[in-house]
Image (cartoon, helix red, strand yellow):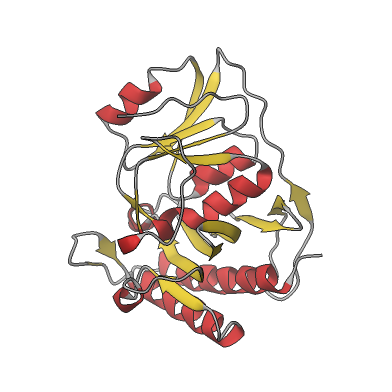
Length: 264
């Protein structure tokens, strides 16, 4: 049985996902640029409102850090929820489907619980009972459905399955990947890349580009619960959360059996 925290995160992710899909299926996405020139839509803001209000009501004593509320970014806590209400806004705008709702709980620097929901793909990943699962739809916001326990792929050292970004692939990433014997390559957007590793569909995900903690925490939680790892690319130390500014270093996500190589 899923605990209260995950049941609540799941419910909020599904409610936010339903609102996102309402915008996705219309022409009224309300696109504009934020100060950092990243895209923002009405769907981002609507999903953020649902999730942040729901978390503050359900967990009034816990901090909430969310991408779309800049005033939450200056706070630092040992225990907090961290939210990206719509990860993969470029995918959303371009109608490519690889966008996700991400909600995680961080304690003492580690993401200990998380939900990743891809509403256009109808895939829902979550942690619970010390494991990671993919729920089988259709998804009822109030009643969790059947859960498939995720099992990591056993990698073939001479034929690794690599997953990387659709929107942020660059020469540095290609050079890093070239150090490995690659058997297959898969492209995916948003935090789905972590979930593909957790679901046994890939072995290695290098990210040599800028990300924020709200981009990664929920997917990291799912992969860690399945038995995988997310490491800093420079030192190969575990990626931690609650850093000043909530900005991540480059990182390498992998399953057991892959020997990660430091970058830089």
